[in-house]
Image (cartoon, rainbow, N blue to C red; front, top):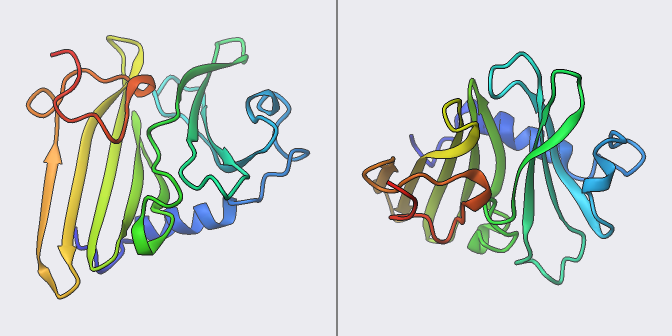
Length: 196
């Protein structure tokens, strides 16, 4: 996948992120989600998708602190599921899955949004300066373990003076990491981790 030419799905994810940023005022956020958005935090994205293929839509909520002086502060990913009766429950939460606002180098905020696939989702990041990089982190639902698990990490990098000689790597379990649940994932410390 070329870093120089964004794919249609990347452009759509970026457009969705731009449209979602700041568009969820407290009064428009569904009432059942309001308790999960702390004072001083804003909704970065909100999506409803049937990710685990049970016929009920999961809600994926990303929130971040309004305080821009703490640009390295956490961005929280909250994943909710619905019971057969329709009640929303928090299935998983992670404060270390989405890179911070300043983690993208000269490019600024590296978070490009999410792609959703049957059975899972991918967090998309892109940043750098002369050295450009991409980091895509994919999670999928494990029916056996009844939890969200890390299933793939794709990285790519290149120097702007020589974009045709980039490096890319795909990390997968069990070779590169073991069992890592969404709640325990840390984008700075995942390689070689997890129960095998």
